[in-house]
Every structure is written in structure tokens, then in C-alpha cells.
Length: 446
Ligand SMILES: Cc1cc2nc3c(=O)[nH]c(=O)nc-3n(C[C@H](O)[C@H](O)[C@H](O)COP(=O)(O)OP(=O)(O)OC[C@H]3O[C@@H](n4cnc5c(N)ncnc54)[C@H](O)[C@@H]3O)c2cc1C
Image 1 (cartoon, rainbow, N blue to C red):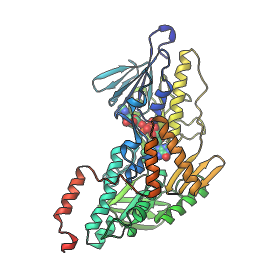
Image 2 (cartoon, rainbow, N blue to C red):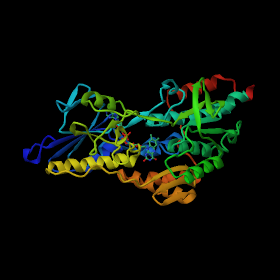
Image 3 (tube, rainbow, N blue to C red):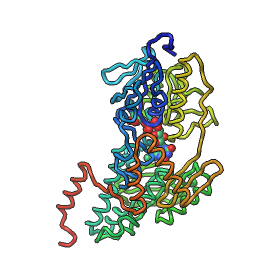
Image 4 (tube, protein in one colour):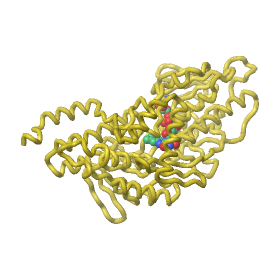
């Protein structure tokens, strides 16, 4: 590792990515003597992705779950935040490349996360967007609320059925949370808001490839989650593979049975793939990536042969604990980030620490109001207690990095009253939708 305290030159730590991994690395290096931190992100904010689905379904606004990185780190006087996209690294020269700028480092931490994977069917992306960024959430929100608006104007029953059919592909937490939230929207929140359509006629299909939804929780909790979704009105299909998405028609196969549904709103929550930085790192350092494009790391999260380059979070493939890569969840990213910060500090004192060990505190997923599942060690909760626990954990972590008390009160209020204040249809396409609507003869005039 480059500089030591005796050099008197500050040790330069460059962190690429201000998500959970990068931000928690920077926070843990706050005001450390003789260490300069540069955090680079292509966005100027940290995004609390676990609550993105609430933006996508109109409960929260994007600003409620985003914190400007500069503000979060304003008290870290040794930390500089730069807005920019890192395109390359040069491990020999020890600098990263951001456009025409070269930024030197002694220690590099790469935490650029993951993106959606359509398992080779990239043409599905346009019809079936995934949820990863604020823009994705706004686009999904536009599609959901536009579907109801267009259905209100539609007279053809078949077209109306397609508008009121929502297909969610993938029964992990995002798929479960999205389908539960859309069900509450259709069957409760919007119930009295439309005149020409009956929103209770909405169909919501959750398609899961595996044997059960939420496969990472105990089987009884998966079962309870499926039952809660069904009670909300969601049709849950397990052992079901999507074989085609074309012309807003989803073809799916359950056993030998092939079915099709025409749907105007298809949402993708089925797979992730490492960000392109994985490939760049592999090319420049000769390291290997796993099948999902994640960088295979050493027990101390560094890259083989490059002790001063670390990869944390969703981009990292760490399988030294139980032979399988750790899951792509926020606690893995934050613990990895904190570990690397600790290792950097120890190395600067000429010491080291034991390999990284992930403390798994369990898994949770929200299904709808008063319904969630919590699988934390021996504690297996469902229904209302699980929902309260989920609420507490999310409020706690959201508040931890920025003071969001007021926002959370507002959120809790809208949750309890089932009002969704952020039902905005925005973007260029929304204007096109209005045009289509105004050009059509209205139902009443037909
Ligand atoms: C919809 C959704 C729901 C989720 N729900 C949960 C949940 O309930 N519980 C849970 O534990 N986890 C959840 N996760 C997973 C969790 O959010 C991730 O595991 C976590 O964000 C990973 O952190 P990270 O730092 O690796 O990446 P990210 O948080 O994705 O951060 C990556 C950062 O890198 C930046 N970046 C990328 N490329 C570049 C580049 N070339 N140059 C500069 N900056 C770059 C990005 O702008 C971003 O800020 C969810 C994820 C999603 C998408």
C-alpha cells in the first residue's frame, strides 16, 4: 500500500460510487488524520433504493429518498465530493480516469453497484422497465398512473383490460413490494377516484421463476407472503418462466402450460448484473468476474495482486464465508465499506485486520399495509408486527444519513390514510399522453 504516516503526505483514498458501499466507506474515514478522501459519483445524491418502489407507486417523492452527497459528507472535512462518471482506471499509474481528468490514488475503492439483467433479452427492457434509479421510478410511476388515466378514456373492453393488467416479473423483494403496492393502489387508494372504470377490475400478476416468492426467507414466510399478496388481489404464479415479451403481450410458461396476457404495464424485477466497471477492472487488473459480472475479491475485499484496490457492495463477489457470493443487499455493501475503511486506517498504522466477515441480521420485505415478513435469526415475524418492524428499520436507516423525520411522518400518514400524494404523471411522454387523450373523441360524445 502506498503512503505511510511517516511520509507526511496525506494518503489519498479515491472512492468511486456514492451508494451504500461507497458512502459508508467515506463516512467511516471521516476526519481520519493524514487521509484525504475523494468520493466520485455520476449523480450528486445518494439514493435509498429500498424505498424506490414507494416513489414508483406514488407514496413518496424522489427527494424523500435521496440525500445530496455533498450535504451528507459536509462535516467530513477530509472528504471531497466530485460529480462525474469514472470511465477507466490505470492501476500501474495509480489513477482513475474521469473524462479528461486523471485522479491519482493510493487506495481505490470501487463501489459502482449493479444494473438490471434481462438474461440476454435486452429488447424486453423498453417494454418492461426495471427499478434501479430515480428515473426508473418516475417512468414506472408514469406508466402505472397513465394506464389508469387511459383506461378511464378507453371504450374498447379488450384494450381497457390490457390497460388494467399489470405484470410484474420476478418474485424477490422488489417484485413483491411493487405488486403489493399496485394492488393497494388499484383496490383501495384509487377506488373512488374514477368514474368510467372500476379499478377493482385490475389484474396484477406476479410471475416468479423459482418454487416460491422471496426465496431467501424461511419457507413458511414465503408462503405467508404469497397468501398476503393473494388476499390483496395479486395473482401469484411460481415456477413460471417468461418466454417472450412482444407487442405488450407477455408469454409465460408454468410447467407445460403456456399462457399469454396482454398488458400495457410490464415491470421487470427479475435479475441484476454488475455495473460496467466490473469489466473495466477485470481488463485492467487481470482479475476475474463471476457470471453476473461481479469482481471476485480476496478475503480482505481487495483485488488479487492489487492490495490497494478494493471492490465493495453489489459489484463485489465475496464467497469466502460460505462458498456462495454474498447477496446484493444494502447491509453487505455498508459492512464491506466500513471494513475497508478500517483496514485502510490499520494499514496506515502498519497493522492489519482479520478477513472480512458479514454479519447477516436477516431479511425483510413489505407486502402492503399491515403486512410484511421478517426473518431475523430465530425471529420469524409476519403480518402487523413484521410491518411495524419493517417501518422502524427503514425509518431508522433513512434518518441515519439525513434528517428525514418530517418526511417519514408524512409517509407514515399517507400510509395509514392510504392517500398517495405523489401520483404525478411527468416527463415528455406524459404530454404525448395528454395529446392522445385530447385528440380522441371523449367517451361521453360517442
Ligand atoms: C428497487 C430496489 C430495492 C431494494 N431493496 C432493498 C432492501 O429492501 N434491502 C436491502 O438491503 N437492499 C435492497 N436493495 C439492494 C441495495 O439497494 C443494494 O444492495 C445497494 O444499493 C448496493 O450498494 P452499492 O454501493 O454497491 O451500489 P449502489 O447503491 O447502487 O451505488 C452505486 C453508485 O455508484 C454510482 N456509479 C455507478 N457507476 C459509476 C461510474 N462509472 N462513475 C461514478 N459513479 C458511478 C451510482 O450513481 C451509484 O450512486 C434494493 C435495490 C433496489 C434496486
